[in-house]
Amino acid sequence: MVLESTMICIDNSEWMRNGDYSPSRFQAQADAVNLICGAKTQSNPENTVGVMTMAGKGVRVLVTPTSDLGKILACMHGLEVGAEANLAAAIQVAQLALKHRQNKRQQQRIIVFIGSPVTYDKKMLEQIGKKLKKNNVALDVVDFGEADDEKPEKLEALIAACNSSDSSHIVHVPPGEHALSDVLISTPIFTGEEGGSGFAASAAAAAATGATGYDFGVDPNVDPELALALRLSMEEERARQEAIAKKAAEESSGADNKEASSSNTDSVMADAEPASNASADDKGDQPKDDDDADLLQKALAMSMDEGASGAAAVADAAMAEAAADDQDLALALQMSVQDAEMPGQSDMSKVFEDRSFVTSILNSLPGVDPNDPSVKDLLASLHGQAEQEENKDKSDKADKPEDGKN
Amino acid sequence: MATAPAPTTAAPAPPAAAVAVPSASVPRGQVDLVDFIDWTGVECLNQDPAHPIANAFKQGYREDDGLHLASDSDEQLLIYIPFMQVIKLHSVLFKGPEEEGPKSVKLFSNKEHMGFSNVNDFPPSDSVDLSSSHLLESKPVTLKYVKFQNVRSLTMFIEDNQSGADITQIQKIALYGTTVDTTNMKDLKKIEEH
Image 1 (cartoon, each protein chain N blue to C red):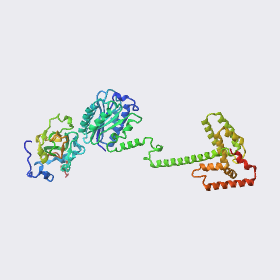
Image 2: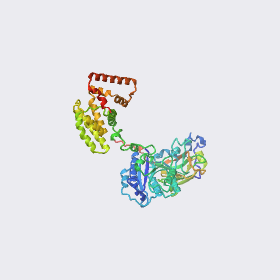
Image 3: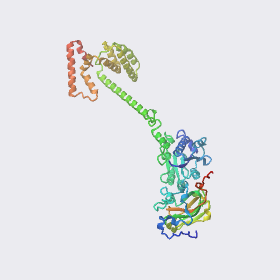
Image 4: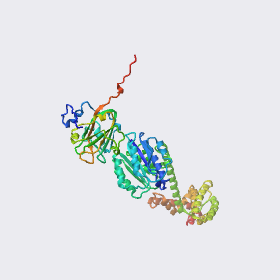
């Protein structure tokens, strides 16, 4: 809660027409001035702020120090840009305006925005700085825009001459994507010597996190319960999606190896296949094919749910054709077939009969070592079981898996 | 100024005992005006923020020789002292080190808004040349009493110091005088109805 009286010197010289600070130097400066005026008047109800211009028809005081924020903001409108800024005169006039403040308890501060080049030499600026220091006036400088002719060095010298117990500051703002006011918000010029109070601190915090920095567009400080609920919900959804992705990855890796190892399929699939296959052929480019394959996969999975999954019609020819034409399509077909097969016990045993396939599945599973002796034993026993069953059946089916294997 | 201030009857007390018996240096018939100063309005230009005016001017602080007021960028100081009521100023007392203590002091009555730039624009109500004996022995300097009959605020311009050093130091400032009789609102009594 520093009690102070501030004069803000704004630069309205021709140099301010430049558009290197969006939307223009002058507008960016006006925004920053509004922000600072707000912060100063909010930090202490007795604080006063005055505004003056440095260029145009000579140095002119627009508002003498007042605590009426409306008055301060209103004076910024309709300012004319023109001529050259007179820094030395402006600072001295500002000092005079501060000297005649009503409340002697207020500390004195001048904030200078300077976007035009500084024509005065270093010595003169140092003299002015010393005079300010002698009169207990603190000086803040916002250096932006033109940087030629040792301007930063000159302003640094001015601040160094005026600085007393670290009360004066200088900020160099290069042109860039950050707005002038956004850069100032985190500087001591805006937050004050004690790290900012109330308005300034909250504004600085908001700027630090960014306006869109909150998750879900909700400020966790305003409604912590809502923010927590939203966060939990998001984490659950993320976990669910991860699980699905993992499952899909496992299935596809399993299907890769099983490609064309089984030749059983549905009549439904046989019906669906030629049409989609033809459409895939029509479109020559590869990415489209992938998309089509995905869509087909979905369609097939749906039809499998609906259709009679037990109908073991043989569609070998169609499958072979599909595999030759489109690897992805074949893969999709395999997957859907695999899904359909799973419920059947005999089908299951057939799957396990294929040693290379089982090994590859085990390989793809995390945390399972196919070379582990216990796993090997289990596989051997499974395989033996299946063979025994087959022998009992004595059917011609026994050779079929070997036939289908590529 | 030519005549030395009339010491009180207990004047022969050694300077070291001044802290113990502050009333010893108060001229006869005068009071210490410290109680009538409007502290919210006191302003000291060119003071070192580490050694503010309160060190030399406030009761308690000013009795401590370890605390002093010091100038910052050069040897000059400008002190503005408003009073809560109109006073008559009789004498001032400065205490400081022999080298850095103040030398030329200009006093202005009822001049608000003075700065270093306009100290020479007005004739001072009185100017004082302090000697090292004044500074060391805490001897009050009598002013032109007629010039300070109706004082609402006092501005003291300390122009230089004893040795011409860059920094001026003051350990104690005291003002002696009397208050001009004004209506004391506490003395007003409600007239009883019969």
